[in-house]
Image (cartoon, rainbow, N blue to C red; front, side, top):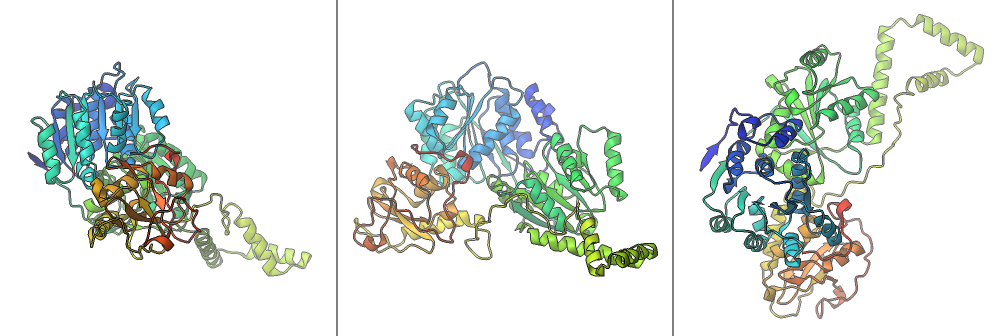
Length: 608
């Protein structure tokens, strides 16, 4: 087993990847392989099995995707590569990454398969003969049993974040899937930790694997204040504009992922009155040096850059770094924000994070060993106050520094000839001055209201994992035998539901949490108390469940049984907690259930 803490001084071109893959890597802005990539790519290209221990954010998606894609035969229209991921978010994220790496492999199709998406849609997509499948264990197993997914010609199987699949209760499904694959297939298993069950799976199904362990770097950046903004219904450009309005910055670097995005964003910022310029690898050396010199001299305030173009950049004026696009790995994040806060100076770093990118946020916090506080986006009132303050400051400076004699004479003549109130004249002049930058900004984009924090003083998302453990303890404590349920009162803003699976079916709390949180797309933090009985269980979910989501949850499978979800009538809870109808609850101020990816929300389909 090898340990590493430093990135080897090699390039991707040294690793034997195919030309189309190398072209995509170059376009993505990758410069040198991360440690997990440097050690994984060669053995995977050779067809070896691999056991990798690495945290999220170390670049492991590219570590397995780049070499395994290089070995795919695009002329063979059968699944050749299967990636199992614990959650629908990770499955989508991995599929998108693989698609980007395979953009120059003509004829290659990548298909994400996960619970919460229409089975009909997936059946139609499977008919397109994808060579790469990325999915959650439950839905993959469902397709195998339906014989709609055939793995007879599978070349490689990847288990991504295996310990997370174990924790969510999917390890049995994973083993069943492994048994359905050819003996000759190549297996790569990645896990942040190596608990006993994961090690047993590796021993049973991996053949003489190469073992790699990547130690997490400790990066302490004491001089940099880090904040994040969760991307909501507001467009990112609108959010960025608001931040630029109220942040006191001298100079700033805004990081994006692609070269094209640097030019597009810089152009849009220029149109909004900000002195900005792109900085990317396509620019010749003279153009890059000119942009850097302009910033150093104060003639340019914002650089919109890619990771490669900004490496080693040291400009004393840079007070802010904004990660407009989240980086691919934690190492890139550390390099990015290191452009500010240099030589003991204070710096500010702001990270834009979509809900599907929360895993990377947690990985960054772990790598830097610093919490990243949530940024409250400036309101239109905040922007108005800021503009008024700047205007009055400019007014005072003009009165003190300029010779206004001629202009006073002009205004005096106007006032005398029109018999105008001096205050009214000043107001009219103020109106004319602020027309291009209104002191009362107009809201062009409606911002979706932020969900209330469920626990004061802490980020609700961060508690998701510990919450599951707490729920498990509650569900296991003082178990009742038989079918008589103890009176069960829901927490404020929650409603109690019954599911037709219990201890006699072998269910555990983690199975129910995993199925509902993952396969139906409900945030785990929205799942309340779970109580296991012999042949049924009860679960608290937020009020206001949409009817289509309720119907979907009825069809979710756990321990070979459908949940058959039904709303509990608390007036009858001590006798029979089951209600045969789903009554539309009164709306409350509490959080309502929303699928994490509304664009992929299913209709009424079996979910496993």
